[in-house]
Length: 125
Image (cartoon, rainbow, N blue to C red; front, side, top):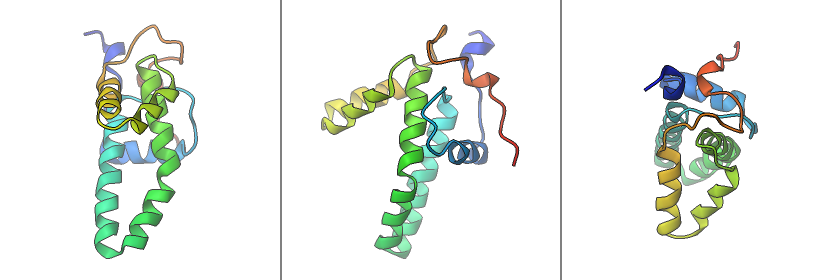
């Protein structure tokens, strides 16, 4: 597979930094590794805060709601789909399966949503 189709392989911490730096950025594209590392962070964060307090877990989920929607939108853009496909999540079981299928697909080139995520540099901190 050509290098430009493989996307960028991010680490766990790089993914979290990118997703929070693009807190409500619904433009552009996100690689599979960026998306799935951030989802792992959300799951671990929700479990860890849930052990401490249900209210803290709720606050964590509320604070990370917009970044999770934004990164899912950018991930769908990477597969040349609109972010509105996330609304499939409201359809029990079948919608979830279709949405996960869309999110795990390889990036599509050429793409109407911009250049591949491999061309994006990490923001300066």
